[in-house]
Length: 484
Image (cartoon, rainbow, N blue to C red):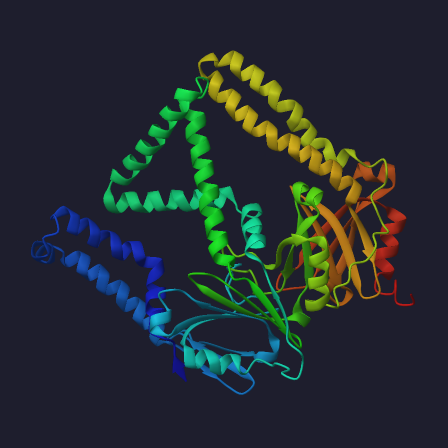
């Protein structure tokens, strides 16, 4: 059996990186970069460094793998031996990553996933993750079943589509978390200097803005800068992550490639795709554009990954691409819709927020007059998404529903600010649940919850459907459309 590429040792050190790095940096700073003095008094730091490196080495030493004819065999551990095999035919997605620093060393990170119950308790961890040489990588992927006799079909996303996709799917929160982590870690290494420089820059921008807008407060400007910075970091991360996005299909195998600095390549088994998700927000709906994501165990599973299949483009191009790449995923006409008078469940929360925020803002400004500028700013920032959410939920009431075709179910619903059109093959439906609240019993309505298969079952809920229509779908969905 073979061992992993030695770069895996660095990965095993990743969890203890700060334990290793901080004592060294602090020691060097304390003696003003005099390495001879540092070595004499840093025996504890050196012990910690050797311990971390030794622990990583032993973890690497006791992980072995063997690429066999029909499966990959993994063996881990010394005292507690963990041994398992993953058949190539069971792989739903195989992900290959070549970070910029890996390429000169000819190292590749591979992650293999199946629909089986996850070995690890961590949701974003693959069944098998190995750091291997390029030779072992090619040997492994040559074992994955591929029908070379089938015609190769390709789709390449344009740069404009990728920019729009990154704009729409960037998360301000994730960007702020990244910035916060950077400053928390950075302040431990270089003290308070990094934080002072950042807040000095924020203060300078605040003064400039207040020069032109007298009503602007330090709090409101600083918060706006932090939000904008977080969104910008997320946007750039998404853009460089998905640039050069392309899809190729041959037989049942779909290959997705993307990435600028780090190169990503996914081998997706199309027969194990659980459903296709056509996503839109309200502005995308008005502009008649959408993005397609897919649910396939292992694809888009890791942290900060998006399981995108078609970046943002027009509905016509989305449907033509789906017809080429996933011909079995045909959209059905919506037949079961929410009851016409069933609207309160859709709009009550945004309606309460829209009315309640101005009332709360008025009360608070009366109590805390000295903070009136900050309170008004926060109130306005909260009121805008509340009004937008109200518009989203009104549109959701008019577009939600379930359609049953010959081989697929189509489920349209809205979750938070996003509209979802789910196309799921009938064979990937785990079960359908009908749920009724006391208020729904009075109006003869119910919620229909459709669970789809996968490593973990996903649920899709449609509210306010008439009970008779819901029961018909739940009992006979696998037969409806077969005789059409």
